[in-house]
Image (tube, rainbow, N blue to C red; front, side, top):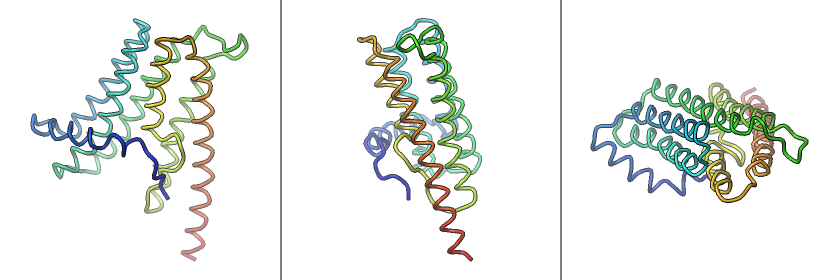
Length: 208
């Protein structure tokens, strides 16, 4: 069963409002997806070239909002397509790549507590993040249902990065919070993997 506690429910009214405005100016679902990727690229640029955590957090937040808008536009305008779903999923992974790449480059020379290489922390976070989404996508290929299981889904991951970046704007605690973030994302991946395994086994036994 999919998790009921998701930030996207909290931001749903805002996403619907923005989506209706975008529909009026003839923004299609796929164009909204492209815009989402564009904001993630802007987040990468602001962090890599200007080391501006505040702008980075704003662009990551807008990336998350636009990620919800493309699906909302598709539903509100009855333009949902299989290619749109594939395109959205592909671009979501690409946007995460740019966001994590910015974090990777910025922290490339840092060591947490002078021991742990920050590049490893960001790399593990990125891989676990991608695998969380991959687990859900593969499970939904074989079985009907929503396998959005665990704490750190995409919206929660992006919002966590926003909060960490805002903290990093005012306090030198970014690396510590990225370390905590890594463990949360890694734990979510392992939890989702185990839960999906159990669900698949139960469904297989029920079908036999």
